[in-house]
Image (cartoon, rainbow, N blue to C red; front, side, top):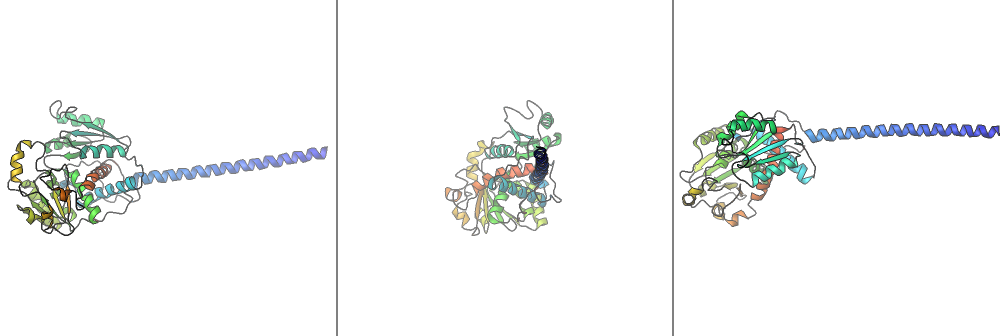
Length: 377
């Protein structure tokens, strides 16, 4: 009996030791797994925030975006790089990147828009932020409340403002009084966010921008002005045809000529569409009658006679010519044969409004840097 009791006692001791060792091993394994998971989450968070490539010398955080005149070549290229990266990671890899979580944007629209509103609202929300759309019925700049006061109030509510306005001076006043960045969603003088989409579209199609020749055929308007403030910085030659009385702004033209000289590109102004289209890679036009110009419709249609882009226009362009239009398009500006042809990039161009506004805002509000290799520009 004593021997049996001793055996049972020894067996119990052995079992206790074995269980203890097992528990210690399991606890150690648990700690190792938790440590590994924590490290993975940390790496993922770091990758999500910053990507794998350093920002280098380009830092756009906190900057307003009123005109491409204020941005150098490296800064424009960086915005396009970030835009392409977000498009790749979100659209093609299905990643969720809440870069703007906890942030909001005030969207002031004095002029209606499909692409500007939808691209900004969907893009800001896709990055985890909250867009607030303000129509003239919600906010009447300078009437119900001064622009100065509006800028200061919105600065306390939101992180950034996008304003689509009639007068560029309104944007300048908003920017002067606000303590947060202001983005130009369109003004009478410039439309820079449209040009970002156009440049990304051309880069995707041609693989590079440097050395391309672009022909603008139409009104000397805000979209053209933004091309004139950016094309030379990216090595793009610009050929412009406008009817008499519709030439681009004289001050913008003077600055564009200076930029062309500085960056070694060509800038030519014509009054004949076919002359401007000669040897061009990209044919571009826009509406002849902008919002607020409806009373001029009949005169403008007469003055722009012969400026419609057709396959005849393309016949004098380069063999690889393509067509851009920021939309909405009217049949008098470009015929269906061109607009719906394989040469037309208008719908990828429209989609890229979303990716480029996302890229721009990410540059302004976050420390994000892209993971994909730098774009060839």
